[in-house]
Length: 294
Image (cartoon, rainbow, N blue to C red; front, side):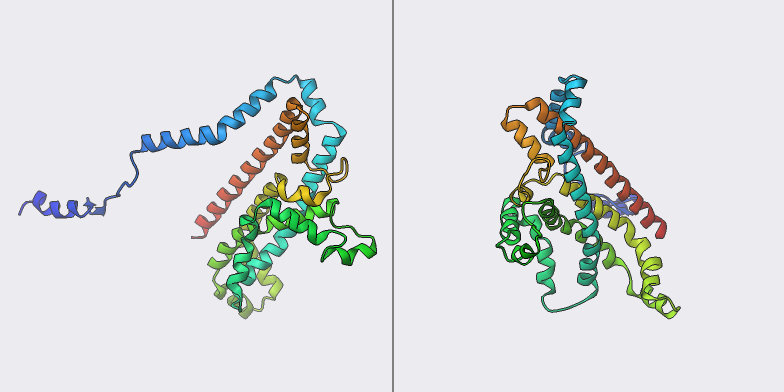
């Protein structure tokens, strides 16, 4: 039997050169790349290009006046500060929730795991109405704080609570798979060597979890920064007090101030790009750390 005849059965079975031949399910690279770029261009790049083109029609003085008005600056401060606070708190409790779900087996664990994803599935308007009903002065939670002069709903505090609600799943779902891959034997070895629980967490677990924690923080911060539906029902929307940036944009559009809305939107778009680049850099750093560890 010749070499060619001997290789024919292997070729029919998908083997070429002693290695399995890759089966290409989708069409060729050029076609799939073209369709990918076309879809991204229509869905993502076209609206952003229209926004940039609209902003380019403004003079620098008009742009500066629109984005530096006192009411707009107050909305920037509230949106960024509330998002930062909510993301920071969610990092602490998100890691705790991920730890409980990964390391402990208890009745109702699947239910708790499913509840973590509830903010993903729940319409933001429904979440906002529910939070307003709970945090209001006559609500289940707000009534206990009202006698002490603490108002939860219709204040910046309500904005932070709403952002806590929608941002928690991002931290939990980012940290959970990394924590699941950590072998408990590492903690047992550290304990056998005399390390305390804090030393084990700080020197064994934290270096591995840190990239995922930072990525979860960035995702929760980015999500909170652009949140609208769940916040407007619980914020009160008082100018200079509890008004967020997306509401400023909506208000300008309702007043037919398209130039002002575009200018404020461009600032938020720039902030989103900065956050996006930071997330990609963190993911690349995490990949390099994982590759170096193996």
